[in-house]
Every structure is written in structure tokens, then in C-alpha cells.
Length: 329
Ligand SMILES: [Zn+2]
Ligand SMILES: [Zn+2]
Image 1 (tube, helix red, strand yellow):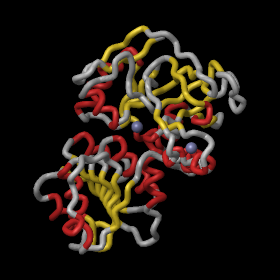
Image 2: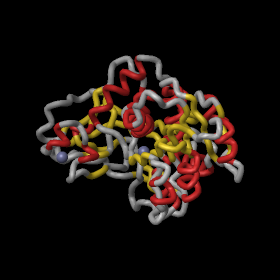
Image 3: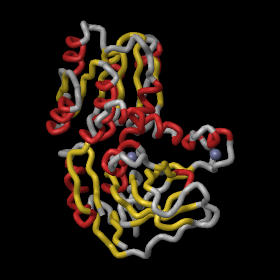
Image 4: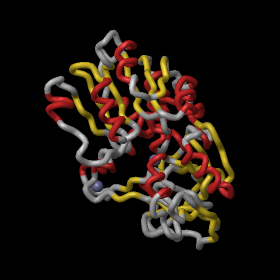
């Protein structure tokens, strides 16, 4: 089968690989779509992954059952969740695989087939198209929904989304859908414009006047919530500066260490700082319901490439001139 190999230093190529074998409890999925995630850029730009790839958002059809799988059948359409909990602890029983002490994560999904644990598969409603399913069962919309639940406060009016990669754009779409006034911020024109299409009231290109402009837009107070989706030193600093006194800063972006001075950044202004990583398996049905209630997640998709052209898709994504990019085997 065809599989994308990330060869490191921002390059990749298609290789011919042995089809995966299911371990006990696993199933083999014939991939219908996989999505490129911003979190893959660390591997892609850096060391790569010999013989594999960091793809972890995919949907497809069950074509083989491993030993002991009883909850799925051949031919089922599923969305895969890449974080695998042990299945036995209290967190797993609640569908919170990301809180399981023995959790691990899966990848190699930019391929014609991939293996995944059966309990990480969400059966798809018959009328849910593949494109939408890719976003609704993966972290593309999983993170924005998980974030929305963590900041479910009645008095939130204005939300700044700092960094408009796919996760940032997902937050824009989600928060606009929930009726909030959204201010998007990025350094790349394409993404600043795309955020407007997804419902941002205002979308700003970051420069040294950014905080001033956000204050002008918020009557000098700052935003009720700022979601950092860039994980850069500057974006994190700006996130605290853009939040109002007593406001909330949410971390979606993975940041480097030694970034915060609690006294300066949040003690004295009584900011709530919220960590938010991935989403719970148990939240997937809620995301299906959001779609049924009108959340048009397909608007997040800017490009679709055949799997054969995945190297070109990664180059384009790496330049920042995309929103969500899907690969289609
Ligand atoms: Zn992801
Ligand atoms: Zn567990």
C-alpha cells in the first residue's frame, strides 16, 4: 500500500509499505480522508519519521478485525481518535482517554490503510459525509469544542483567537457559531482573510500595534477570553496583554518552557489560565450534534489533494497559505 514518509527537514515522499496487521483489539481502516494538522509541522520540519508519518486525523472503512473486536464489523464507516486509553481505568470508563495514565497516541494515517484500536473508533452516522467526519471526529474541531466547553461562561462576549492555523480557525468557526464576537489574529494574510470567512467580526494582522488595536475594539478593557493557538513566545505574551482584568487565557498551542512570569502575567490581574489539550472520545457524539444543528465544519477545508500529491500538500501547508487540508487516497 501507499504510505507517506516524512523524510525530515520539510520533505516527504510516497513509499510502498506492507499493509498493517491488526494487533488484538485493533482494526484495519481503509482510509477515506486524512487531514494535515499544525502539530505535525514539528516532525515534518524537523527529524521526520523514518518509514512513517505523523498523520493522526483520519476517517475510513473497517476492512479487517483483530482478535477480540466485538464492537465493530467489516464495512463500518468510522472516525479514528489518535489517543488510545488503557480501556480499564476510571478515566477511560468516562471516555477521557487523554486523562488515562497509560494513554499513548497513534499516527501513520496518511496512508491507504492504518491500524487503530477498536475503542478509538467512532461509528459515523450514515448521512455524515467523509469531509465533515474528518473534522468532527479528529482534533480539527475536537480541540475547538473541548475548548468551548472549558470556557462555557455566560458573560463572555469578546474572544480573541491568537494564531489562525487550523486549530485557531476552528476556534473562530466554533465561537462565532456560539454567538460570540470573535477577533482573529495572525501574521499570515491568507489566514487573516480566512478567519473573516469563518465568522470573525474582526481579523487583524499582528504587528507592534496589535494590543492597542485590541484595546480600541474592547473599550480599553481587553477581551473576555483569549485563546492562544500559536504557542509562540510573542503570541503567549500578547494573549495575556489582550485579556481583560479577571479574563481568561486558554492555551491550545504547544508552547516552549520558561515563558510565563505569574506575578506579571496573571496574579495581579486575576487572570484565569486554562490548559486545553486534544478532546475526549466521549465528546464525539456532541460534535455530531453540533453539525446537525448547523455548524458547517466543511467551511474549514481550503484544499483537498490526492494522497499521491501529499508532498506538495505539506509544502503548501508549511507556507501557511491554507486552512484545513485533506488528503484523499
Ligand atoms: Zn491534530
Ligand atoms: Zn485508562
